[in-house]
Image 1 (cartoon, rainbow, N blue to C red):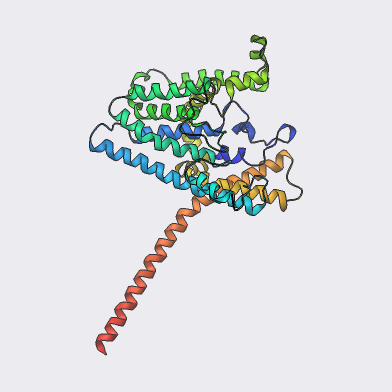
Image 2 (image 1 turned 60 degrees about the horizontal axis):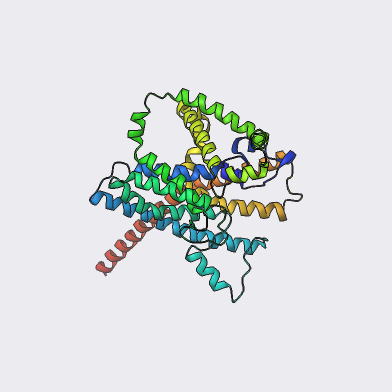
Length: 379
């Protein structure tokens, strides 16, 4: 969540790039925060529903996943409408151009999940993943894990070579950033890993986290070297293939190419081993920031959409000149992270205060009614 907020605010390159991009990748590295968001969502869903077999227990799990998908559908619709209206109100160039003839089609397109927008597109994909997760958990719960895994990778592979024939469930206007057929492989692979984590842990119990950290560190250093050299060493090994073509064929984000999956595996192994070995100091230093955002990630993401829009409008209209230096952009991004964190931390307290106020109000009204009733009886 921190990486997403940072990467979506004040994007600049070169000498004016934010200092925080060294940690987040600036949405320009071979992987981004979006892959982590989808992968962790699938992993946690699998962990929560692990051990469920046939019978009524499986039925409840299916309904729980579908209910989550329905909730996400509502969030997606509200976010899309609200964000589009915010763009209209701010006079943003990306605002929808609506008139009497196109408004109805625009509304129906959003309600039927045929249209999305920048920053709401990943929640859109997230919604479709959970709606499809009901079928996946049914098959996994009845012992057909290999069918789900093979089917997920088959759809991904089909997309790589025949995207028109693999466009599931339908084409989406402005939804080219996260193709469902390509991105679902991250979610369902992670789902299966989480569901069968105990069996996987038993098979890998001899593998030490120190070993994983060492191996992934070396591989990550190689990836960073390729990134800094813009893939020139690989291009030299493949005569006739230009560097842009190499990046598009192996690392494209929207299509989730094989190179991107491999680099994500390296980053995930590195991050997991670092978190395992250094959890105590990490929690002491950054737990106050990271844990609330992670525990309420859907709320954090929803809020960050409007924080990005608000800061974009602020820098374009009120903050003149807009921050162009690395320091200015870094401060702006930290401000955005702080705004999202503050909302996530304060919203539950505001809700609790509202409940306290409601209870006090009910008690006061009950006391008033009791006094009035007593007065009436005496009269």
